[in-house]
Image (cartoon, rainbow, N blue to C red):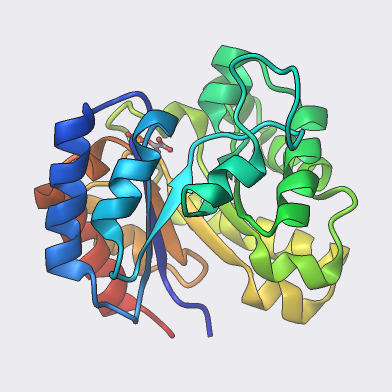
Length: 256
Ligand code: PEP
């Protein structure tokens, strides 16, 4: 059975004091929960401080990005070993803002996935179509290609470390979430693609998060879908008062 997994992507938001305050509140309200996996992904510069606040709880630390090399002359980049050094377990790879604002390619995303697996980090691999692609009936093709490319060279035994986040670009930060049926359709596609690429067990065990304007008001209808195993949450993860109810919903609907 798949344990629900909810991750908060803080993007380039909050300052040091606010990051620690939100982490502290989450820890006191949810820190001992074992029936849901929770991760917080603050900006790089706050990872250590947030990790210190979360110490002793079951809430994991994740990063929003990583570079492909372990060390060296790569000004401005942060490596997998550095993330491990400050206590990260997870790293978001291929978020749509990195694909479409920063210009990351499928090739770079695949290189990052392969490298962080080597280091023992767990990638949250993001895929999702743009609005024009959905309107042109290309969702399936776009998502399948992104996923196949991201997983190129990933071994079957490494798939237990991978989470996939389906994040339709048109739903991220817009307030307009995918309908539960739209999300479920793509989650089914992702699971069957992974079953085809590996085997049915790998497909069945894969945790697939939905991301895109998840809020306390729509979390239940999305998380109730059979193939929606959790959420990657942006805006609503910035405050405990909106993030906690989403996590509680995932716990209550959990199939683990
Ligand atoms: C995200 O950052 O991955 C995201 C889904 O953002 P939001 O929840 O704000 O749409």
